[in-house]
Amino acid sequence: MRVPPECPMSDTQKWQLLALTVVLGFLLWLLAPVLTPFAISALLAYLGDPMVDRLENWKLSRSLAVAVVFVLMSLALVGVALLLVPMLERQISYLVEQFPRYRDWFQNTALPWIESRTGIDIVDLDPASLFDMLKDSWTQAGGVAATVLGGLSKSGLAVLGWVANVALIPVVTFYLLRDWDVLVERVRMLLPRPIEPTVSRLARESDHVLGGFLRGQLSVMLALGTIYALGLWMVGIDLALLIGLIAGLVSFIPYLGAIVGVGAALIAALVQHGDWLHVVLVLAVFGVGQTIESFLLTPLLVGDRIGMHPVAVIFAIMAGGQLFGFFGVLLALPVAAVTMVVLRYAYERYTTSRLYGAAVGAVAAVPDDASDAALSTAAATGEAPPVAPAPAHGASDERPHAPISPLPDPHGRTAGK
Image 1 (cartoon, helix red, strand yellow):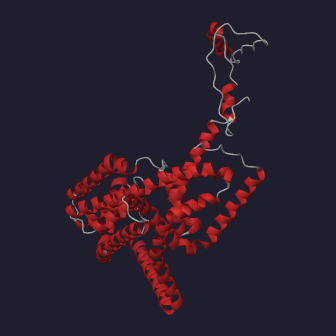
Image 2 (cartoon, rainbow, N blue to C red; image 1 turned 30 degrees about the horizontal axis):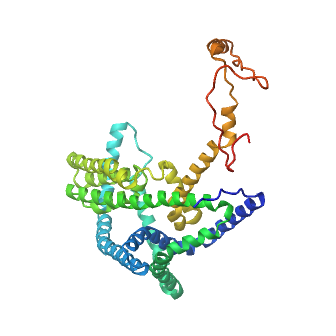
Image 3 (tube, rainbow, N blue to C red; image 1 turned 60 degrees about the vertical axis):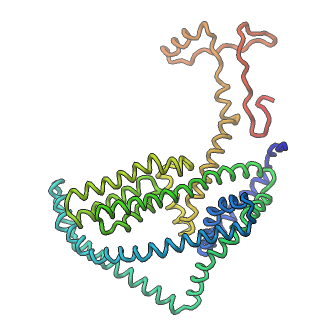
């Protein structure tokens, strides 16, 4: 079936589309507090839809395939929660109990070592006041949390609203999984006809980029968290699970997970053991983890799907959180992935446009027999090299030239016609 060429949009249609985009963005900004469960459900449905499609290819009905995938995802999430939450609770309790030990190590070991190595007399820094300030902040935070939780417990509507949001996630996820293909097709049919082919193409590219990145990156985060936690546990670090989990979670930003994990693990090793052997072992654990990630996990599971600079990833997450809160953090990387696809498309359009091609076609050829002398003279005098005059009408050049293919036009025409 031959695809009809893309029709150009009129100026009125462009302004209408821009106004619609602005209105939708404003509505998202207004409804961001209530859209969080829907965003989580859409993310889960997006991740599970390929598995549902694969089960459909195995001659299962859509409803049965959705039920199988939904049960598997629910069991996985509940199992991880039941397994990790008690262990993390014990780790956090242990960290709180060991907090005075860490404070003493910082005051009596870390600061004197820094002063002896750098020659800087840290007189204005009072570690005791810093830790007291930190303790007061934790106390105030606990008081605020207690007040908020107390208010929530007194407000039945607030409690019901919170429970409803949590209960809404599996329900919405199930229905989105069941009707995902139908919803995508309906959205495609609502697109303005002049831009539908382009938007469909960009949507397919975004789906390829985003789907591979999210599924691969989640696998990398899980694998790195497991490697770090098991390695630190084998080394003998008591906070191995907590440090490994944090390092794995922030590993979607390149090198940040390793930096955070190495810093926290080195401090834990020095406070707990106080010898250089455990420092070397901690470095070896993260060295092995980074090697496995660089040469096996990331090339195999993720690849160069988004192609974003680490600074751009950090900015996207911070900007999303600033504009839309937690809802914006959830959408930061998907929006960034789509933006990268759109920017690549804009680059392709620019490099095949007349604006880009005019600079190429404006350079006239210099005769071969005079090219060397002309260029040498121009370089010596600083003047522009001479340009060969255009042949008279009807005259032909004695030397044959290779044909120059016309530059493609965005509207399907050829340049010069």
